[in-house]
Length: 220
Figure 1 (cartoon, rainbow, N blue to C red):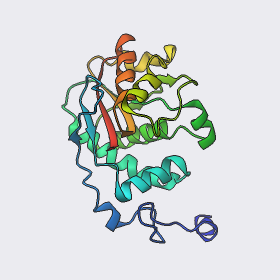
Figure 2 (spheres, rainbow, N blue to C red):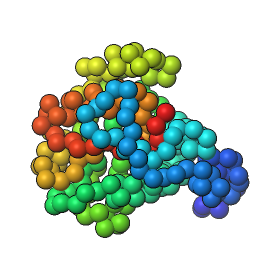
Figure 3 (spheres, helix red, strand yellow):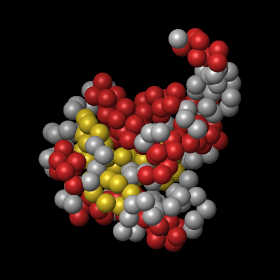
Protein backbone atom coordinates (compact mmCIF):
# COMPACT_ATOMS: atom_id res chain seq x y z
CA UNK A 1 0.00 0.00 0.00
CA UNK A 2 2.82 2.41 0.88
CA UNK A 3 4.51 1.75 -2.48
CA UNK A 4 1.21 2.39 -4.28
CA UNK A 5 0.71 5.67 -2.42
CA UNK A 6 4.21 6.79 -3.38
CA UNK A 7 3.42 6.10 -7.03
CA UNK A 8 0.32 8.25 -6.76
CA UNK A 9 1.81 10.89 -4.45
CA UNK A 10 5.62 10.49 -4.54
CA UNK A 11 7.39 11.55 -1.39
CA UNK A 12 9.74 14.50 -1.55
CA UNK A 13 11.84 16.27 1.05
CA UNK A 14 9.80 18.84 2.95
CA UNK A 15 12.79 21.17 3.00
CA UNK A 16 14.22 21.08 -0.53
CA UNK A 17 12.00 18.83 -2.67
CA UNK A 18 14.50 16.02 -3.16
CA UNK A 19 12.46 12.99 -4.25
CA UNK A 20 12.23 9.72 -2.36
CA UNK A 21 12.37 10.98 1.23
CA UNK A 22 10.27 13.07 3.58
CA UNK A 23 13.28 14.85 5.04
CA UNK A 24 16.77 14.58 3.58
CA UNK A 25 20.08 14.53 5.39
CA UNK A 26 21.28 17.75 3.75
CA UNK A 27 18.28 19.69 5.08
CA UNK A 28 18.64 18.08 8.49
CA UNK A 29 22.20 19.38 8.73
CA UNK A 30 21.00 22.97 8.21
CA UNK A 31 19.08 22.82 11.51
CA UNK A 32 21.00 22.92 14.82
CA UNK A 33 18.30 20.98 16.74
CA UNK A 34 19.94 22.07 19.99
CA UNK A 35 17.50 23.50 22.55
CA UNK A 36 18.38 27.10 23.34
CA UNK A 37 16.69 29.73 25.49
CA UNK A 38 14.71 32.33 23.58
CA UNK A 39 13.30 35.61 24.89
CA UNK A 40 10.22 36.65 22.89
CA UNK A 41 8.94 40.21 22.89
CA UNK A 42 6.02 39.22 25.10
CA UNK A 43 7.63 37.44 28.03
CA UNK A 44 5.44 34.50 29.07
CA UNK A 45 7.08 34.37 32.48
CA UNK A 46 8.56 30.90 31.94
CA UNK A 47 11.66 29.75 30.06
CA UNK A 48 11.07 29.33 26.33
CA UNK A 49 13.17 26.71 24.54
CA UNK A 50 13.55 26.68 20.78
CA UNK A 51 15.43 24.31 18.47
CA UNK A 52 16.20 26.63 15.55
CA UNK A 53 15.32 29.83 13.71
CA UNK A 54 12.24 29.82 11.50
CA UNK A 55 13.94 29.93 8.12
CA UNK A 56 15.26 27.86 5.24
CA UNK A 57 14.37 24.16 4.97
CA UNK A 58 12.84 24.03 8.44
CA UNK A 59 10.45 26.86 7.66
CA UNK A 60 9.33 25.12 4.48
CA UNK A 61 8.94 21.82 6.32
CA UNK A 62 6.85 23.40 9.08
CA UNK A 63 4.59 25.03 6.52
CA UNK A 64 4.15 21.75 4.65
CA UNK A 65 3.43 19.84 7.85
CA UNK A 66 1.01 22.28 9.42
CA UNK A 67 -0.69 23.98 6.47
CA UNK A 68 -0.48 21.45 3.64
CA UNK A 69 -1.11 18.08 5.22
CA UNK A 70 2.46 16.74 5.19
CA UNK A 71 1.80 14.34 8.06
CA UNK A 72 4.87 12.34 7.00
CA UNK A 73 7.00 15.14 8.49
CA UNK A 74 5.40 14.83 11.93
CA UNK A 75 7.60 11.92 13.13
CA UNK A 76 10.75 13.87 12.26
CA UNK A 77 9.60 16.97 14.14
CA UNK A 78 8.30 14.99 17.11
CA UNK A 79 11.55 13.00 17.35
CA UNK A 80 13.63 16.17 17.49
CA UNK A 81 11.36 17.83 20.03
CA UNK A 82 11.28 14.73 22.23
CA UNK A 83 15.08 14.70 22.31
CA UNK A 84 15.09 18.40 23.21
CA UNK A 85 12.63 17.75 26.03
CA UNK A 86 14.84 14.95 27.32
CA UNK A 87 17.93 17.17 27.09
CA UNK A 88 16.33 20.01 29.08
CA UNK A 89 14.83 17.81 31.79
CA UNK A 90 16.11 18.60 35.26
CA UNK A 91 15.12 15.34 36.89
CA UNK A 92 12.73 14.82 39.77
CA UNK A 93 9.70 12.65 40.39
CA UNK A 94 6.36 12.92 38.66
CA UNK A 95 5.17 12.69 35.11
CA UNK A 96 5.78 15.04 32.20
CA UNK A 97 2.60 16.64 30.88
CA UNK A 98 2.74 18.29 27.46
CA UNK A 99 0.09 20.94 26.83
CA UNK A 100 -0.33 21.96 23.16
CA UNK A 101 -0.82 25.67 22.52
CA UNK A 102 -4.41 26.27 21.39
CA UNK A 103 -5.21 26.47 17.68
CA UNK A 104 -7.98 28.40 15.96
CA UNK A 105 -11.09 26.27 15.62
CA UNK A 106 -11.57 27.16 11.96
CA UNK A 107 -7.96 26.38 11.06
CA UNK A 108 -8.18 23.02 12.82
CA UNK A 109 -11.35 22.17 10.96
CA UNK A 110 -9.85 23.15 7.60
CA UNK A 111 -6.73 21.05 8.23
CA UNK A 112 -8.76 18.12 9.50
CA UNK A 113 -6.57 17.81 12.58
CA UNK A 114 -5.00 19.71 15.47
CA UNK A 115 -1.39 19.64 14.32
CA UNK A 116 0.09 20.93 17.59
CA UNK A 117 -1.86 18.42 19.68
CA UNK A 118 -0.72 15.63 17.36
CA UNK A 119 2.89 16.80 17.72
CA UNK A 120 2.63 16.88 21.52
CA UNK A 121 1.04 13.43 21.58
CA UNK A 122 3.83 11.90 19.50
CA UNK A 123 6.42 13.68 21.67
CA UNK A 124 4.93 12.18 24.82
CA UNK A 125 5.18 8.66 23.43
CA UNK A 126 8.73 9.20 22.20
CA UNK A 127 9.82 10.77 25.48
CA UNK A 128 8.84 7.62 27.33
CA UNK A 129 10.83 5.55 24.81
CA UNK A 130 13.86 7.77 25.47
CA UNK A 131 13.69 6.97 29.16
CA UNK A 132 12.05 10.25 30.11
CA UNK A 133 9.61 8.54 32.45
CA UNK A 134 5.84 8.73 32.38
CA UNK A 135 4.64 11.33 29.86
CA UNK A 136 1.25 12.40 28.56
CA UNK A 137 -0.38 14.97 26.30
CA UNK A 138 -3.42 16.87 27.45
CA UNK A 139 -5.55 19.36 25.54
CA UNK A 140 -5.86 21.87 28.36
CA UNK A 141 -6.45 25.05 26.34
CA UNK A 142 -8.86 26.33 23.72
CA UNK A 143 -8.87 29.49 21.60
CA UNK A 144 -12.00 31.58 21.13
CA UNK A 145 -13.41 31.60 17.61
CA UNK A 146 -13.00 35.39 17.44
CA UNK A 147 -9.22 35.06 17.45
CA UNK A 148 -8.02 35.59 13.89
CA UNK A 149 -5.00 34.46 11.93
CA UNK A 150 -1.95 36.24 13.34
CA UNK A 151 -0.05 36.38 10.03
CA UNK A 152 0.64 40.02 9.17
CA UNK A 153 -0.28 41.37 12.61
CA UNK A 154 2.07 43.61 14.58
CA UNK A 155 3.30 42.59 18.02
CA UNK A 156 0.66 44.81 19.66
CA UNK A 157 -2.08 43.43 17.42
CA UNK A 158 -1.03 39.84 18.16
CA UNK A 159 -1.31 40.49 21.88
CA UNK A 160 -4.75 42.10 21.49
CA UNK A 161 -5.87 39.26 19.24
CA UNK A 162 -5.42 36.61 21.96
CA UNK A 163 -6.03 38.67 25.09
CA UNK A 164 -8.97 37.12 26.93
CA UNK A 165 -9.49 34.59 24.14
CA UNK A 166 -7.56 31.66 25.57
CA UNK A 167 -9.53 29.54 28.01
CA UNK A 168 -8.89 26.48 30.11
CA UNK A 169 -10.87 23.37 29.22
CA UNK A 170 -12.19 22.77 32.74
CA UNK A 171 -12.49 19.06 33.43
CA UNK A 172 -9.65 18.22 31.04
CA UNK A 173 -7.13 19.79 33.41
CA UNK A 174 -7.15 16.89 35.88
CA UNK A 175 -3.89 15.27 34.74
CA UNK A 176 -1.87 18.49 34.70
CA UNK A 177 -3.35 19.68 37.98
CA UNK A 178 -2.07 16.53 39.68
CA UNK A 179 1.52 17.08 38.53
CA UNK A 180 2.86 19.73 40.94
CA UNK A 181 6.09 17.73 41.35
CA UNK A 182 6.25 16.83 37.70
CA UNK A 183 6.98 18.81 34.59
CA UNK A 184 4.28 20.72 32.74
CA UNK A 185 5.44 22.04 29.36
CA UNK A 186 3.57 24.22 26.87
CA UNK A 187 4.20 23.01 23.29
CA UNK A 188 4.01 25.00 20.02
CA UNK A 189 5.57 24.99 16.57
CA UNK A 190 6.74 28.59 16.11
CA UNK A 191 7.13 31.52 18.49
CA UNK A 192 6.98 34.97 16.91
CA UNK A 193 6.18 37.63 19.52
CA UNK A 194 5.28 35.24 22.33
CA UNK A 195 1.78 36.69 22.73
CA UNK A 196 -0.02 33.34 22.56
CA UNK A 197 2.46 31.68 24.91
CA UNK A 198 2.13 34.53 27.40
CA UNK A 199 -1.66 34.42 27.40
CA UNK A 200 -1.66 30.63 27.63
CA UNK A 201 0.68 30.66 30.64
CA UNK A 202 -1.46 33.33 32.32
CA UNK A 203 -4.61 31.24 31.90
CA UNK A 204 -2.93 28.03 33.04
CA UNK A 205 -1.52 29.61 36.18
CA UNK A 206 -4.87 31.22 36.97
CA UNK A 207 -6.34 27.71 36.74
CA UNK A 208 -3.72 26.38 39.15
CA UNK A 209 -1.65 24.56 36.55
CA UNK A 210 2.08 24.72 37.40
CA UNK A 211 3.41 25.24 33.88
CA UNK A 212 7.21 25.41 34.08
CA UNK A 213 8.38 26.12 30.55
CA UNK A 214 7.55 26.25 26.85
CA UNK A 215 9.14 24.26 24.03
CA UNK A 216 8.83 25.33 20.40
CA UNK A 217 10.37 24.03 17.22
CA UNK A 218 11.41 27.40 15.79
CA UNK A 219 11.67 31.09 16.63
CA UNK A 220 10.71 33.69 14.03
